[in-house]
Length: 288
Image 1: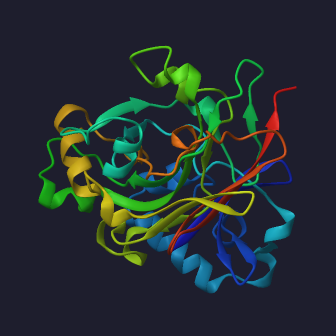
Image 2: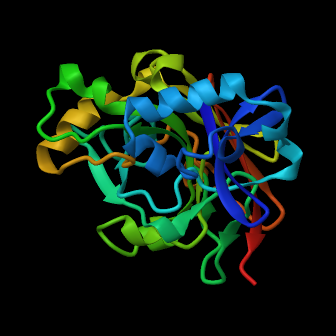
Image 3: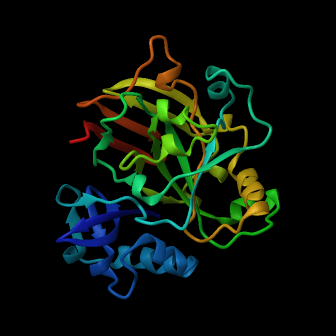
């Protein structure tokens, strides 16, 4: 199943894309929650009811995809856990050896933005970089999970642009500040349930494109720490909750490692695409 979060008439809703339209679940199934996090908290039954509602939806529930405004898949996920240097080639291009344990940092909800919404380049920096990433979304509480069971806890997948202010990232030994400027983390638009993709979303082509030019081009099979391993390692330390977002790292080809460096600027459009999931597109604008 595929779901999007969107706004229509000032209300936040969720829906299922069908043939260029969106089945508005607030109309097709009024008893269901109007946000993805609450739907996931219902467990498999919530997704089952949503799927049944889509199949039986009448024309009154159909909304043109041109008539909606996308929202971040979840406005305030319980946690946004990000993994650094999860592709060996990206670690090497940045002058580091591939890690032997995941490099972990957090993003806050105020950094998240929707498909088609502008990434904001702040006044204080011109070093705004792009990072194509796969996201795994937790579907049930996980604590002390064995690697072989890790994928059982993932509800589905989506896309992320971990846009980063590189100069601020380097101001500290911790990366958090460079990763948390407001409106820099493109998130969505499509939530794809795990059963629609290969196990662990393995073997999927991942790209970033800046103004149509391919910048990053890799495959999720290149992960140093695949999804099941990340669930095991993270749940050893913390309780993973329903709706937690695991942003799994970016491949080689980022802007700062190029010669000369390439950074995003006002007027650019950055696209993230992962095979089987879709495209996340964001224009770039300067902070007013």
